[in-house]
Amino acid sequence: MTVFASLGISSVRHETVQSRVYEELRNMLMTGKFLPGQALKINDLAEAFGTSAQPVRESIRQLVAEHALDASANKSARVPDLNAEQLEDLRRTRLALEGLAAEIAVQHVTPADIARLEQIVAEELSSDEGMDAVASISRNLDFHFTLYRCSRSEVLPPLIESLWMRIGPHIRTAAEYFDAREGRGAEMHIRVIEALKKGDAAGVRDAIECDINRFFDLAAERVSQKGA
Image 1 (tube, rainbow, N blue to C red):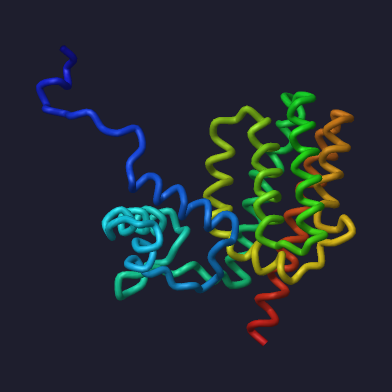
Image 2: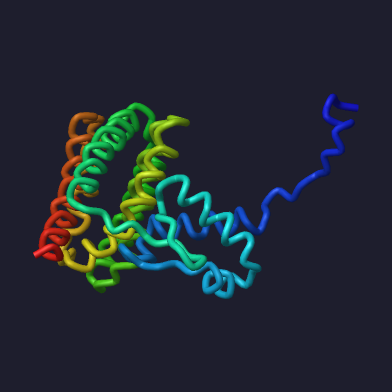
């Protein structure tokens, strides 16, 4: 008998409904399924997920606490519509964390990892040629986090994911604004792979930083146009 047995703690399911709802909402934010400023009503989401309102409400509360969503009245939340200052803050933070993760990844990347990255880029190019922004964003996320997991860091990927929950909706608007055909969308990812094959840590970091800066330049331009 363990020290906790007398507390009457019962076993729990490995995966609860609320955790599944949370993970799905989290992924939808990161992949731009929701748009900046979009209202997310708890009852509508519960109906879409086929659950009661409670797991959705708890998931929304958790995402608000993580600053991925803004709380709203009338049983809803709202996707943050970031201003220029907030975008610049996120730019600086992404450059620091993702640049570091990319640089460290060079020390641990394997031929199998590089082959996987090349496969993702091939899928990304196909999505870009078909002007499928949703698929392209998903492949973009796969590429970045496949690379960052190669760093073998336990700390960096979760921190970076928290940033992508905030920025994902703006990645969607930037992707729809940018013509990614003829290799333009995957250009920096191709540079990353070339640098990885050479063991060029500085080159990998530079390519990732160029990729991040290009996105934020597009996002800042869209925010400026909306303000005008």
